[in-house]
Image 1 (spheres, rainbow, N blue to C red):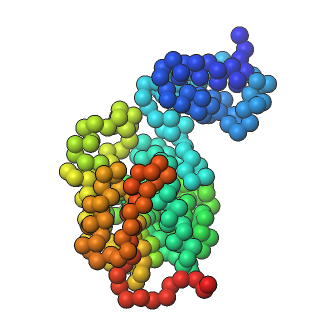
Image 2 (cartoon, helix red, strand yellow):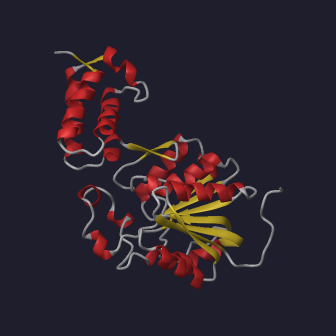
Image 3 (spheres, rainbow, N blue to C red):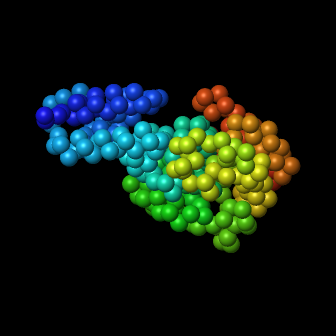
Length: 295
């Protein structure tokens, strides 16, 4: 029997609901739109378009993968973050809403500066730096990661979102001193690996079996990258430059302490949109200079 796109959606919705998917409507809509090459924002017309049996079967196979625990973002190859759609694959973490407040703070502070330079460390998909460059039209971003595959995804996202001319990617190990010649930055931001050794043993299967462990594990206490960045990379900040971190839900006080011991002033802990103390930021305590826009 010939099926409409809406028939495919309803079939997937029932399977996902019975299979315990926490958001069966969202998942069914995303898989249906991807498999049927349909506009997920125009679902009202789905009942008027018919699809071939091969497409129905393909949607079913994608649903099988989802029910087997594979994250939806990897199945469809993209995910929305800060109002933008980013390509993702298993070489990068899936951008999460937890990080959007951090991105918002970076953008707020970038808007206060003239032609701000932003350094995005452990950039992954590039979602933070690219969202900042997309929103702040005179911002220039350098995105750094150790993974060649992650940097490839970042470059693709920068191209697709129209900021390639203002975003540079560079391979480097954040656990070591920065390469020579990077210059100075107004803002350094990082959402580094911060999962502890104990937490790595308790990860949800959808994370443990699919997302890159090198982008998750932050050492025995999860704080290795915060120490390394403050030890070496903070030297790249201009006077009164800002350093912003995302951290684990129990790590904010520890990260704030690391920043304070490295001389940062006005160190602040901020909650994400879910009320979790996940963002820590402070100001480089070097002599003041006026880098702000005219009032």
